[in-house]
Length: 68
Image (cartoon, rainbow, N blue to C red; front, side, top):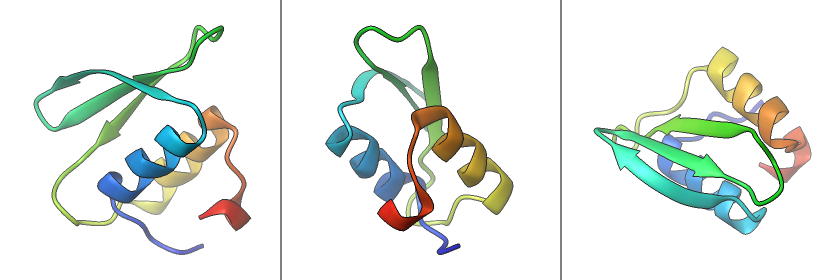
């Protein structure tokens, strides 16, 4: 799996229809219409997300590994 930063993952979420609801510190909170799920993406410059967190966020958002 390719390592990506929080900033890149946030852009991918927006392409998939997720909307930035608010920002609290370095965490961007995304929501999707019709879904009760919220996704919190840590955006710390260009540092990559850890693999476990990335997999969890992808599973929650319904994003495939090939879409990275």
